[in-house]
Length: 319
Image (cartoon, rainbow, N blue to C red; front, side, top):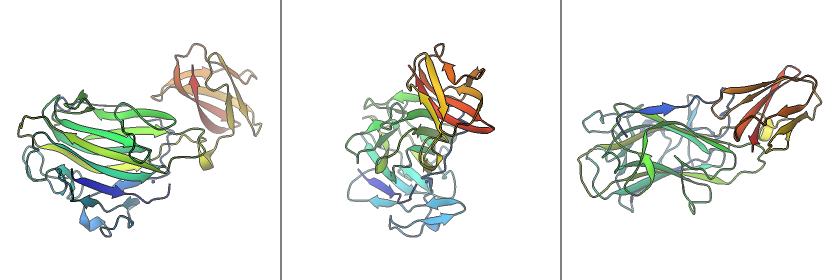
């Protein structure tokens, strides 16, 4: 397999064209570990993975292609029919062969390695594969590649995890859940994990972009990937410099949780949001610091608290 290795040394940055997206929390932050990958030589400093360039608010990192193995992922300008003749932005993208249709019995991948502050990812994808058989899937590892998780359905990270934007997914020939079929246009994949109450993170995160095909050659174009972004999704008040003064006890809680502020500010209002950012409960304070969550379904929630005019948010789990 040919492995395209993109190294990020940054401290803290289907069925036919059917796509669904959740709206992200309006209070999600992406202020750490942000890296934006284009694939045009004109934007890159050199082919040394330790170099990067800051252009128009984004960091650009040069790709390293390992040609000691065989595989079909290539960096370049797509030169196929059926709309597979251009990158999403600029001139180049990562393609399952720039010129030819993908072959049968293929299994290829490329990796992006980032630091631990970049556990969330989004990118543009265009695909044309044999439905329910051939296609793309994304795996992730946080232990140096020893253990891999299919990031479309599971996550190795401590904290909460959402697939926010995804073309329709199918089970591929190798049993992995992935993206298959044909898209009419560019679509977006966005997957976010966020940490809360975490003081130390793993050293690296590895994202693996996989392609697989069965024994039948259908003459399909394959997959184009472009504009890859890796970043962290922290809830304000959860990690590092945004550490919250809020305490929720017990957490997880089943019936009653108690909310306290170590700065002893008065609580003016409390609101609870569910995993997709919908307001599910407004709490009548009445001088009490206790919240009845007994009627909420089990799951992950965000408690938003107005502390003397300043908003603080903290995640909690309802058992």
